[in-house]
Picture 1 (cartoon, rainbow, N blue to C red):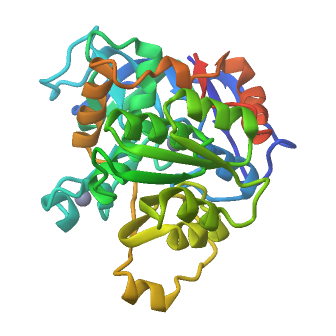
Picture 2 (cartoon, helix red, strand yellow):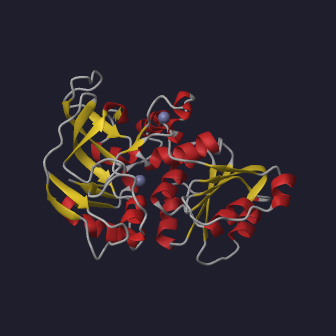
Picture 3 (tube, rainbow, N blue to C red):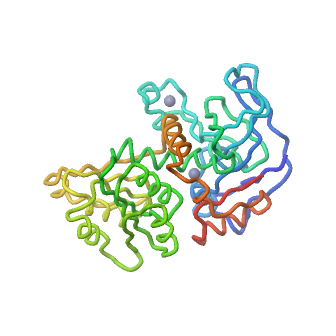
Length: 346
Ligand SMILES: [Zn+2]
Ligand SMILES: [Zn+2]
């Protein structure tokens, strides 16, 4: 089968591009399923491995790709819930199922999780073998290719908005980094929940997209330094929830400053730098600064239901479809900021 191989070292791309070549098709273990990949989303985390030097937990060379959907082709002898021909979403997180977080229903915090396309081979390939418990059946109304967005980005946004941010109808939500893949999904989810969304980003055409997806207001972080003041002004006192999806410490500070008294600041963006939370504000306003990591399988089911009901439009989130041979091109587009979501169709 054809696959895109990351030989490393991390940070050597684009000088050393991903190598698209023929490798043996994996055969599924007892509790594994072989999936014919229909689509796999190009994700910024992969660009962090390729370009920024972040080290994936698995051994190199590695097939990356963790946002996939596909059709079951073969099952291991121990697999009972899936059959050849089933349409599936491959959730990138494979929790161990028996550690303390897993036992308390917080499998997104599992101590010993496997991550498809990071700790084991992923889906920038024609086929991928994955543990049965990584799969969720795709509802028949949802197309396979766009269904790949349900494997990570949409449920991650959903978890931050609903489980951590407790957003409900009538709330005002400020989304920092609303112009990325996660952020634009977040705008749609918040609008579907009946919340008023303020989209913050740096790129005008993507802010226009956010408006089309139902954002109530937009703020360009390229044109104003004091996004917080703007938000406090338009909301008359601050957002009920301010969600950072940028990973940028300055934006995280802005998110804290633009949350109303009693509100929640949610950090979804993965950042390496510390940021300051004003101690006075934390106490005086009972500000809650909360982290949000990945998602649970329940989040996948919940957000898939919203798609089925037509409350979220997946196709509008996909800006590019490329074949496996064009994968380095896809990462260049992502790096240049010219994509909403690019899919590789192997
Ligand atoms: Zn991803
Ligand atoms: Zn676990």
